[in-house]
Length: 589
Image (cartoon, rainbow, N blue to C red; front, side):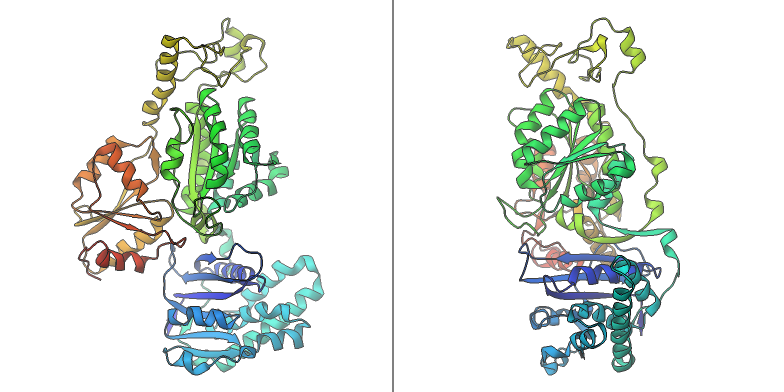
């Protein structure tokens, strides 16, 4: 018998409760003291097509999913066909007996076929088959032996707004599914779940990357957000908007992405900490205004949550295709900072840190995430979100006392470090203009060749100064490794677990994780890169964009690249397999 170490997958069509059922299971398990990592795969079409929700459970903290599935809750025949080969020997498939699926085809694969009358029980006990997913959630916990009280708790929380009658019916349906699966299948199913802490909510929460970015932004004092909804960035906007009244934030849904970035620039110009969020297509529309923020030296935070492209591409799939784009976006040459969090905790930190960097260097800061990081759910200890560590740095923002003493204010004053004293409009001693044209220190448009050169040097000098705040890549694993894996962003969890597995088998391997990517911290990265014996880049894009940036900035070329651009994330098993097959690396696995 194996306890508290398994993967459950739920699959069906849109509208069948795949996501809500998975979220319910995730919360119920977390409230029992277990760690959960959950990812989902869904179609961009509102109806039709196959969706799934996969959650991994453990007593140890989790940072990624795995390919092996121990229990499948299938709402359609198509789901069984798609995923039955993923079931481990001794695993099980729970499915509606009304599907009349050939049980022998499941048993022939070494899995257990477990038909349950989901729709029948939902209709007879609850009065409607819409409760089939509630029945399935009950059955999942029945076969694994998980305490029904945890299911009961989630149902009461989720349905309390719909009234006592709805709560009671869902509880009855869930209990019927629980009892059926427990009586019929539990004895012969070796994977079990049990509560290890009856009250972990005092120290643990479940959230995804976009919520963590929003939480960090609120902690940083963000008071304005403008956005045009675009998958997968929208939930940042939704999260902050939901908290707007509580924290005094103005939330503005604009008519398009151009308006969204311009609203954010205007709010920052007025002295408010403001941000916008979008994906690659929306960022493409924002590019001209990105140049405006750079030229006027206006702080700006943009969360760019990547998806597969180009054009509309894959709206609900994940990739890392925009790194080189955001580094060089906008006509002309202009400074910007790019940070790419790889975990939920790093998303929170990026959410508040980006505002400090934007105001310190008076330039755009781009938080580069992706769909996988933005939407996977992770149970995380609250201690990882230490608000006492959140520091507010508003850079060279002049105080009222300083402004009272000024007699000749130059908004774009040429300084040794390239950063000019910044005043919030409104003080009589600091009335100023600024423009998207090249300008004088006072902000007036100019075409003088000498002054143009000085202003360009002033702005670009910020990149050299910003390098002091760019963090070195982190090295995880053996110091004297034979193979060094290089990655960034959402690939980090799977790379790290692959390293852990290979090290257990005696492989000398490590992982070099980049978070601060632009300006590229060459002096901090070069010693680690040069020490590596074999460098292997692992990225969710076609060209190996971080590998390209590294070569551009250091001259160091990767020995191999493992690239994936199908719109799906890497699993640890896939990385290990590709090290052997694609990168031709001898690994002990």
